[in-house]
Image (cartoon, rainbow, N blue to C red; front, side, top):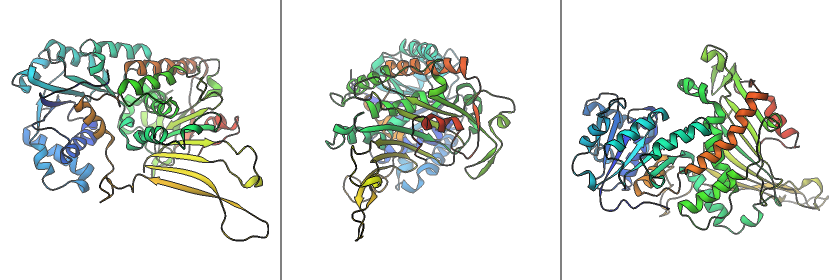
Length: 493
């Protein structure tokens, strides 16, 4: 099933955790911009739910401040005034057995004529009780659907428990597991780049590509997320979801169409083709690090253990050599890395092509490289070889030439003004409202990813007990460079 049809019912967006950090930073601004661009139906209502008791005026002021702080420069006159008329807040505690009935009363009217999206921006430990409340109060009836945020478990077993508990209230077609990277413009453009152009797809294989690098680098430390992060670490927090989703979109076969199942079927095939990493090979295929004292993001950093106040075996950096056992990618490794307190903030995919089979230019011919940058700016750059201009007595010389397709400077559909850089959640919230789950993660994707990651976790527990320290402000531990050095390659720093 590719999508669900909300029909002509009145839509309601229920944001559970509506006063939390993610809601304030990302979700309320995203909803406001969708309203400004006339993507929200009339008369859509937005109800915030959290334990915090707030008077309506104080709640509206908090949301308005959040919207102005995030996107103030893009706000048009009248947007906020119109938007805040949609919103309301109700204080509910998920431990209260009447939670569902109270929410049902707040929704009001004939529940059977509503089309409700429940966005659970809360800890995964609350998914089960909240979904039970929704089920017991009858709020789980179709076409109502639920959106859940990562992390969906911390291993395969716990992810199944969460999926089972949510699935007890909602069928799979109405469970929208969100990975906000899938809402990024450049990530979606990767599908267009690969399958909308004949120039790339014939070369998108092991015969032409030497290797692929995917990097998610952050300059900040764990900050206020220390409690969560110490339990999960970089492997579970970033690689299991964001990095593996980027691997899937880069490596998957052409889908039969853009329907949700067509796209997700191909991603699952990639995940099931990953060569296992376990105790027998984890030392040569992974790097695990933790930031120590140093300087990052313009600030002095005490180090992770100093911030925690006690020793810790949690990794803040992970790099992995990943191999895909299929005809397209056999022999072409994917190198993945993510970490905190690194020198620069960047998310990028680097497609490193092979050398020409026989160079008539001596050592001047360098291999082509395609860099797909997701953040901080959105850009696609292709490096080609070009004749150096001018005359020389020695003959023809080459130079590298960079072709850029900058999405930051791209114009809108009318060609009248630069396109606004959207928050990734805008796309995903709109899809959830429209019942389109193509950019959301299916259960078998989550579990296939955890099945592979569990091998690394088990391997570390038996063969790699403590992460290597790297000074804050550097590109990670020495073992991360060794990972590529032994293959005769280097990171695209």
